[in-house]
Length: 334
Length: 272
Image 1 (spheres, rainbow over the protein chains, first blue to last red):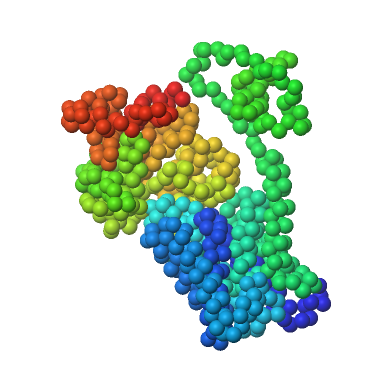
Image 2: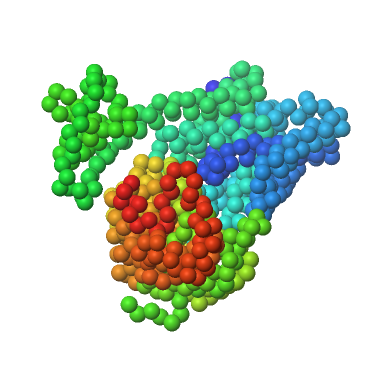
């Protein structure tokens, strides 16, 4: 591990991966909350047009791609707010148009699609010192509002109507979210790459939601997971001689896969007994005594996965949509 | 109950079109401080659209709306209004109750600054009013439908509003929890709040309602005391418009589909 740190290009790559891993899940938390999980993927396609334009005009790819991607993001959001992009067809045309334009411009520039592939799946050797400075500056530009405006962005992402009635400038905050997402997507193209960046925005958030309760706690945990898988993936790809993006995403999905059984365990432990109360208006009418049919299963055994609920002075077990209560040697329907 | 001369909410001749179709036609209504007004109507009568329009969420085609005497377009003091949207329309399953209620304070909080002591206090009080102070750190998804509804009410109360607008708070809430909701609203009324509540069926909220506004096909067909039964409203309707129109208006309620409780089926909640 110490060995790879002696290569300057790996130092830059790992630093870029760390920043990407921090940023992508942070903004991803709001994107997931808004149920726009695939927005990052679409913005990645728009950024490809920016890379193609940079190759064609012989400019540095990161700044050009940032400008193009931010412009595309604002366009998409304004169309959505005006209700013009009600169908997802408009978005699809914009996103795939971006991909096609990028490939075409790259071909005109003489590089073909090969020149693009390092931006599609990331490339450890391509992070220049200039890139790293720009990534560092833009990381601060993204992180300050992502964390500082967290309550506002959370409110707008979770319930836009309510946020508007609070008097919040929801249109502005919605544009802030997509612009931050666009910058993040573009910065990630050196590490995870434009085709896989969406996974780094969404998967750590999904894993964190399985592990910790609450929006802000999940956001912080997702950023931690993001840093872990990004740095791990970048380092691992050095030894495997593979594109870092693929390994980062595989690691992220592995963390998600592990979080799944953990969440079921946590959920079982967290379950508080539900208390059922009878509607009081028919208290004088005795509850009929209804026996269950043949019932080989013993409720309350360690292998019993029926939910236990507290019903008056005893415990019922929820069984296929009705409740069973122990009565001497049999079960009653309650 | 003393009503001040300036109503909390006043709508004049409000018309709204959605997708080129008229949804609301010439609606006028007022809500005074300390008053509970129920907005009733069947599916598609326009009651939710009306509430959204009154809060500026849906644009007006014609007419004017005044909140606390100020035209809606110029209204800035949004912290005087608490909005409880329909529970089914929002996506808050993973968030904690305290986070959700805390977001109700954002109208008071400048960006980039942490919540003040007053913000925390208001959120805590709001949870106490709805009886969920002990569930502050629970995740929304672990609460029952009725509890989730109370969390949304607490979120609206956190801003310390003078007008509370609730969109179908009893939808999908069992009768027992509807009664708890009614008790919460009674407490708010006691504190002098004005309440505008959209209801599909009246149920346990009936004793709280000072005035009922009944919508049908985007028009106000009744504004006054709570109608005691569906038949009473229909008679009222027949005398105004004649039996012919009454038949066509009732058409959606016929047919072989499952019975949907009408707005005026006072008993329907108790039977289910």
